[in-house]
Image 1: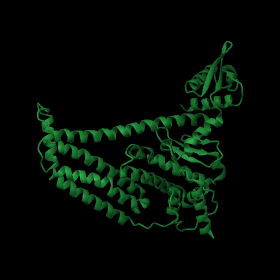
Image 2: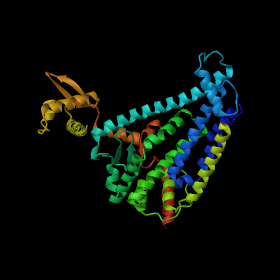
Image 3: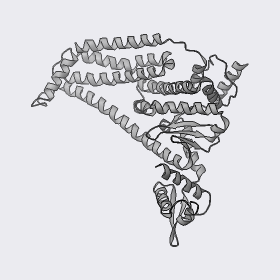
Length: 299
Length: 115
């Protein structure tokens, strides 16, 4: 029972205090891909602990070690009469594990299907109203400056003429590079589990925080790609054009909180304040704690 | 897909360029490089995709667009600019929707800094 309790505590910790801690950390904005990995790991730990905890409760003998508990469980279910001595706690444990696993699979599949339909519909219309610039880029006649990426198979970068007419060549390249970053990073697929959690488990602090931050991190990561290929100046110019500001920003923080756009401009303007060693220490610390927990459980 | 997709767009443009409903023959006149049957196939596909409606006019079918080009573009841009509904999750935008107040704050901040 102690192992089940520890696993439950790990799940609660991942869902709430650790999520809040990660959400309030500054380093993920500097290393967006490590940040994305951290959010993913947190989600896996959370769901994994619930499933494992359920299985431990379902085990016929309450032993301290998780491996032993699982072995007992397998032995019972592969035996001749698996239903002969199913206790109340076993039924509860099993339903926790099965429900958690099924819920995650079902909501992700449902969200994937819904997004796929919306994107196909969008791509179909793009096919008749947009002009293909190259294989994956489409131009649409529209007065407002606009750029976005439609993820999925046959993903498309969409640019409005309002943008291509107003932006300089370098700025357009940088916008295309940013959207290309989304394509290369498979950000559509990456965001999927977080979108589905945010839609279906709104009450869970992890669901809300993760989706909010992962969306931002994906933008940062695409910005990094654009900066690497087209330079910082072009991207800053494009971002400023988007809000109708035509002069360059000096290299200092803006100090306005709120939208991702502000955070992005601020990030491009200020030099790196977090060293990679800081991130490394966080990652090492997190892994150490996790390994310790696993060690205790598998002893 | 590629060439057929392009042809679908061109046929739609032809239909959008006039107020009248057109027969396949009338549409095909605009595409001398393509066979009549190709244009017929394209019209058929566009009907199945609900981009055009087909009606019997006398002895032949006539086609007209379901909606204007502007309406289709508006529909797409609506999805691209909509930040609240779950439609937003289907796309990844270069800049997320920001409201006018936020834009004002940003502009003011940028102006202040550049002085």
